[in-house]
Image (cartoon, rainbow, N blue to C red; front, side, top):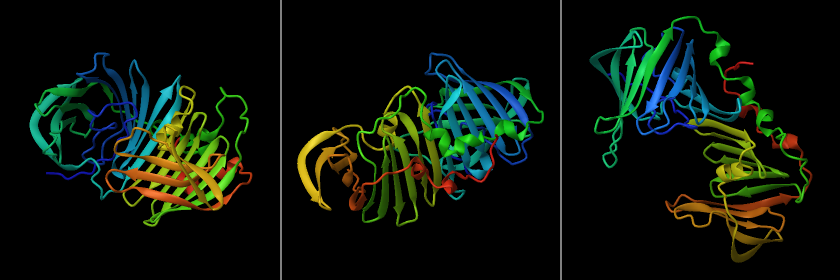
Length: 374
């Protein structure tokens, strides 16, 4: 048995049937290669996805094309690092990266089972292995299989229902063992620059401010928040007493912004910049999608505020806020049916001009320890 650590694959557009968005490696000595593959889900009637895989010096780039969308994945298996990016009209409009601590078995892999099942796929011989995850007895999970060549290249995968019927599979079409340059497999450097995601979209006119800028500080029993508004941009940074950090910058008019988080277990960065769904980033990253008047008022720091349910009809968790007439939250009540909610109360508020430079996350948050391609 071989114990391995699998990195977290961020599924931007793919379904839960996929074991990993970049190939499984049993060891670090996999040669450079370029592979063309076809990936198919038995439950999807729209046909398979084309999959182009390139590998060099631990880094892997995977591009998947289908009728619905194009997605690009980058990963370094032995650094527990995975990145994903989705395209719109040839431009990357969504990006996510996650790095899990090596001690954390994120995908619950407990062993790799060797087999004597050898197959020839695309003219290459490979041996099948099962990636065994810890089971949930109340919810039987799929079986994950990978087929590796003698030099460690993954050329086929299968995901099986618990009944052992095929749910999803990937098959090699063409394999070339050849040098692959660094720039082909490392993610573009601009994906880690805040300016890439916070630049004004060309489809919008100049913003006309209808509310004032401000800076505020809010505290809870386990965190402190800094809140800035430079209309229509918001920045919220939450620093936990446990050392965790969460930073969100979003545009309340457009689908545009970024999110960063770090804890002892995982580091994560997400960003989006698209013209298709104005305002949807706010719903995705601000935990709010409504504005139902609760008929209650409060007075805090000499400021009047009215209570609103920002997640109406939510049954298990949500957000309630007490907002001033110009939209400043004096109380943020994050409630949860599981008992782990958190309430933030404002302790300092200054209405002042806020520059766009102040809305940038700290540069260290976007430094992930590799240069990236230009």
